Length: 553
Ligand code: F6P
Image 1: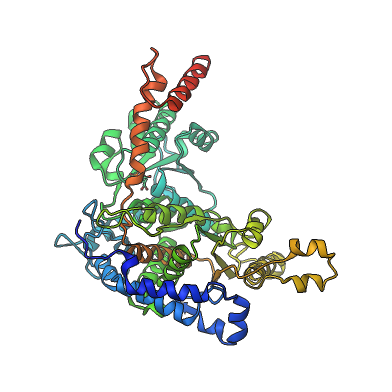
Image 2: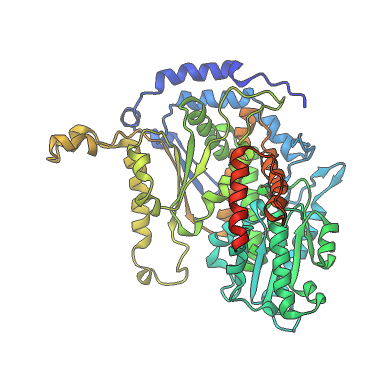
């Protein structure tokens, strides 16, 4: 696990940033804007139909130059080239990281172990498209000869969050008479509620699991299989009502799924980066191959942008650098993702996995404990709902919470309807969107509050300090291609930060211990005879409590 990297804190670029931070940390956005009438233009970049206005951040031109120098010193350009050319950059698992190949619409060869992987990528895309068309058109029949009316994707983490987020995001593009649901939690409530009103002979399950061993997915798949067979009675029905998305052909076959109906992907696709692979099958079934390919085009356009644009015009690099600035110099602990679009309601949750599973690491690439902060807590909700919940703390709390505001000029809802019949929702939504970043940046001073005739004892409560940083990401409309661009934008932001922090962004060892311990505890919960418990006193007592109530269940 050799790495030539020095600790980040030893880099001259880092030290220069520290010095610069001490100069700029108390400068107010009010002054930065007042001093520079061109500030918005100076800190706005537009690419691939996405506008990033990052002028409401606590930065100057020097800040961005110094941050870019840090990325340079960390070898971002080489790291990016290594990823795109298929080097095994996921070194703790000795794997290439090639989600970019899944949407390589230019179809240029990408080599892994001396073989071009593009023919395989295209073959599976073709298989997905044929299958989707067959199901959507009713040509694919269930065991009793009826067409499929409901699709249930069973998966968790990267095998769930991407498809469910994108399905919600692209609802206007879905075939509305096809029910599409997602089951992830091992809590039986999830599968129970998802299937209770469905007809087994009209339901298709997609078991999506890279490993085909994940406890949640396999348990839910087994329950779904029992549910299906209790109605359809014959084992052969499984082949008409279950398909699999996996890298593990043997386990898929052992489950009873026809190998013909397995959609393959590969170990060079990380779970949380897998939406463009066969993991997106439920999405393709919902929106159709044509829209799915449009989404891939969007991803590809942003991949090209990330690969070719210089740092000062590179949207992902800019977002990555800003994140480092707040995380490592302002000591911000979290980062809010605030989409002003209800269709993006699951986008913050999706980015939570993408970012936190990637960059929630505390050793560097040589295995040394880092002495600098790595990935922030990612969280958020769609606007305007968040405004009536947690924005109070962002405006007036004691914590600095940098936020990305994502909004669109045209609504994606009610497409095709005349504007008059759609009311003024979009203008009101976007008025709030714009007002929030303005309020967060500029606030309201005590003098301004007093000038409104507010009693002096209330003035401090009504002051908004401002200087709360935001980035605004705006585009014309949320379309399949735009969604692809947005996701890729953040994927490459995460990559940029991982390189700067010198951590491995593409493994997730931190999920293992809990899985292992759960495996040990399960038999202790279910054993008939009282087991001898060898945990700590807290865990032992909690296990006993569960067992006590379970006996009465
Ligand atoms: O939570 C850990 C994890 O390995 C994720 O990285 C992954 O997306 C998820 O579990 C599901 O894994 P699989 O697709 O193998 O079922």
